[in-house]
Length: 311
Image (cartoon, rainbow, N blue to C red; front, side):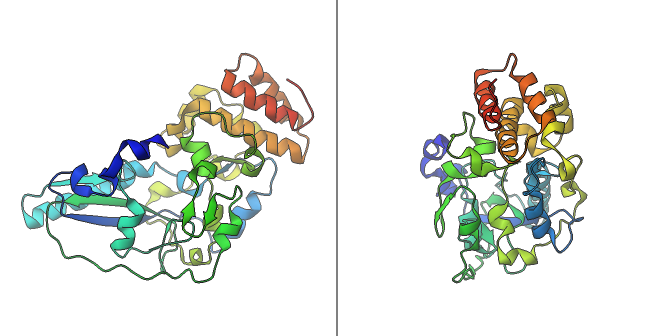
């Protein structure tokens, strides 16, 4: 989490990040895969109960959103420049010290939910955010009011208790942070709660009543790709690094690299073995244990121990 301190007040002062900035245009892009039906939340929760399932967050099951959203924001900026004349601008999408949620809330895209994500009455929270910093004094839009009320479904749903209070998230406990951003050992006390989640976590969004209004993606880029809907832990252990890179080409998943990928698989496999014995999974773990890096070896040993085995 050191990057938060490293960037200092640039996160809260757009003109320090991009000199000359006087306005920020915020945009949303819906990502719920088009092929998901109205019961998508129940389907996702059901998959979490399958011991052999390898669960990937919905936002990462299609093309890397950084590329898709950045291209579209740049087109918007080009159009704005064509309409208004020379325009100083810079496009961002989860790529710099930008307070995206706060900016989106202030611009009226939604309100900050108790899980700290942006919520919209007509779209829930299943969307990406992007920004264009501009030196054009555009009219300012109004913020919207909070509509979470007394609901605390997201807080109750968080597997690791990362939502420590309404509107407060301890990212160090968040499964999305642990499986994506964190590059060291996953704390042993948190491993059981991760379940079979190998990349990200959607639980707070799956539990949110407002997501019954989640909008389906309007571009094919966010369609769910194989093998994610039916991926199994044993099946993913068959991938070497070349296969990992091939299967995750154009995906946000590739960003974590093979070492974190296998670390995550090991944790998920240990949780699966605690629920039910699986000879194929045990064989895969034992095979990778030979010559494993210290990081992977420690997680593999933990996983095998969940089945009462020693490496």
